[in-house]
Image (cartoon, rainbow, N blue to C red; front, side, top):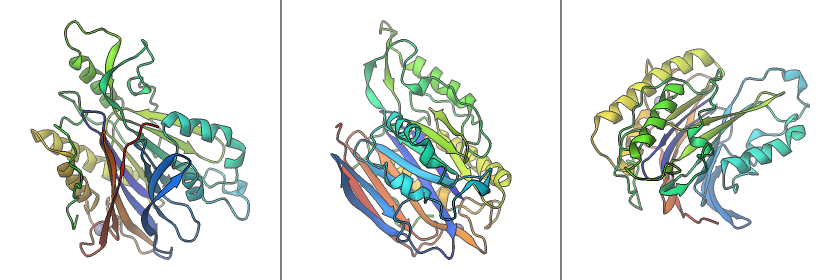
Length: 344
Ligand SMILES: [Zn+2]
């Protein structure tokens, strides 16, 4: 039960929005704080009961977040399963999608005690032209993406123009970016993967060596269903949806709205990351087709969207805007936490 939208920006940055859908009985999350582990700093809210979290971002420019996933065999779980939030908490310092993959791979046995989950890892790209071996082009341009049910919703029709998957930006995130104080709230697919690839081709300057290209932000998603761990790459805008009530219906409805949202962004000639954060926050607060189980800002009797997080990653900083209440609740507290980017 969650909605996550990811949009890469020109220049290697990205923006990620997350609605946390939870039981109304669960204790309120603790506000995000800066923390350190090893030589990495990270920012994350925390679940006071399980001690884990559902989202966090670190100074390497990596954001990790969780969605629930369908359990294929609930009988496999021990009487007291390990909290998936704890799994996320333990890896908030990792500095790449590859590091997340290695970590999870090495602990497959331990995952048998963990409920099913869907973990999304977003990673900053590089604005410069990096030398890339043919075929190794950063996994970003190797659309080995296999559509999997209950995950990404696609396809989108994003056709990047000048190098940004969502056509934007002269994006130089202003520090101190504001995400509209009281805010109101996705998808991709192989079509957008191809579109991104063609956008890159467009970027190449005449005479430029074929082996050089900018590296764009990308996302990896890891799904643990209790038996298998699968991974997918997402090089363009992506939407991830989970619903314990009606997975297919939620994907369909939220997917439709996400495509409309991306189309709306494409109509604008230019905007900066603050504008985009505001737009995404408003999108995450939407009630379509009606305020209820299928809307992005989710409301049911037993569960609801209880907080909303927007992370913006720029070459110099990573910033979290946390809305401590329903995304549509204009009176909820908002906090902002920021870290300077550090390469190592
Ligand atoms: Zn709402």
